[in-house]
Structure formats: C-alpha cells, structure tokens
Length: 248
Ligand code: SAH
Image (cartoon, rainbow, N blue to C red; front, side, top):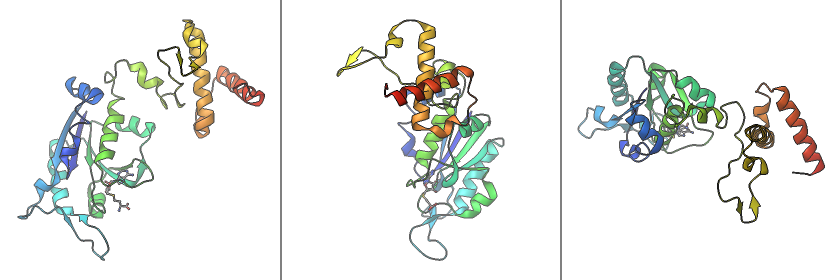
C-alpha cells in the first residue's frame, strides 16, 4: 500500500517511521511511504506556502496554489489513491475507518498547518477528511502518522501473527482483556489464577469474560454494537452478579 504524505515539515516523520512495525512493513514492501514538501511546489522566490486569511483575523492559511500543484503531481503518479485531508472537522479515526482505508490501493495524506488549508482544496481534491478526535493539533503530521500506523497494522503480514490484530481492542468489537507477564507477584498483586493454569479453555473463557467486563465498565456503548453469543450473555450476567455481590 502506498502512503504519500504532503507536509511542510517532512523532517517530523523520521523516527516514527523508522522503528518497529512500520519499519518492518517497509522492509517487507507491504507499504511504501513517500514524503513531499509542499513548499517545493511554491513558485515564488520565497517559496511561500501560506498567506493571511481573507476577512482578516489571526493566523495564516495554507495557500491553494502550491498544495494543488503538489496534490496533482502525486495524483499523476498514483491515480488510484484517495486524497485524505487531516482535519479536526473530519470523521473520527476509528477501527472501522482504518478497516475501510486499508482496502484502498493508496492514501495521499495532506497535513495542514496554521489555521488550516484554503477551503477550495477540500472542494476540488478531497475524497475524505479524517480527525484524530475533538481536539486541535498544531498540524496534520501527527494525524498522518496515526493513520499510517493504524492502517499498516491491519495489512496481513505486518504484525508477527495475524491473530494479534483480531484480538486487539475493537478487533471483535470489544476492548481487549488485561495482560500480565512475569513476575507472578508484583507489589503484592498476583496474576489471575486461570492464566497460570496452562488450561487453554480456562484461559480462553477468562479472557473473554474479562474483555466483556472491561468493555462493560469502560465503553458500554461498544457492547450494544456487538452480537453477543449465549456464552457472552451468561458471562455478563455473572459479571453483574459479581458486582452486586461485591466480589470484584
Ligand atoms: N483552524 C482549524 C484548525 C487548524 S489546526 C479549525 O479550527 O478547524 C492545523 C492543522 O492541524 C489542520 O489543518 C489539520 O491538518 C491538523 N489537525 C488539527 N487538529 C486535528 C485533529 N484533531 N485531527 C486531525 N488533524 C488535525
């Protein structure tokens, strides 16, 4: 999958893209990341990429001209890729959105800066607008990194085993169960008994129940969206009972 990232600060991406899963995915040629400095498409002597907003007010706006030229050059290389703007006004990046994006042949990610980009870029080129959440970042670079990371994890072969992505939080619609590693006791807290039992069925059941317990406690909204099995419903009744009895 091709990720083409259009930014005024390409230097921000060295580091995050050179380690761990993303780096391995690049090595395995599962993904290809190209960075473009929007300023290189500015035609004036000072390579101006921003200007004062019409109507006045604080801040600067990214000019349409250089960005349009940059998008068009990249689009010419990758006609099948979707143009995705990063924006606090976009649809929220969720697991479901990442699953949608991973099906695309490529993403052209546009990183805004300052007050944002000239609205005409959105009108002419944008296929999608993605937000990391209801807060304002200083630029789209961190959002682009998050999109690349979340999407890459979903490419078969990017993780050590395909199972990991499915078992992760949201993979099956629930939050993931809690994890423990050695030592068996830490500051007086022990590892739950079933995890030490070596009994796979016991471990599976414990994990499923704790996944339901966490989701119910932290994200009850997710529970209403998943299809629960008979076993799940039984476990949820037990959890309710345990809470009522004060045994957890
Ligand atoms: N004035 C704009 C915010 C501009 S922030 C507004 O109020 O809507 C500058 C840039 O940072 C944006 O163009 C976008 O690319 C990026 N950005 C800021 N917050 C973001 C978020 N929550 N998700 C994704 N990108 C964001």
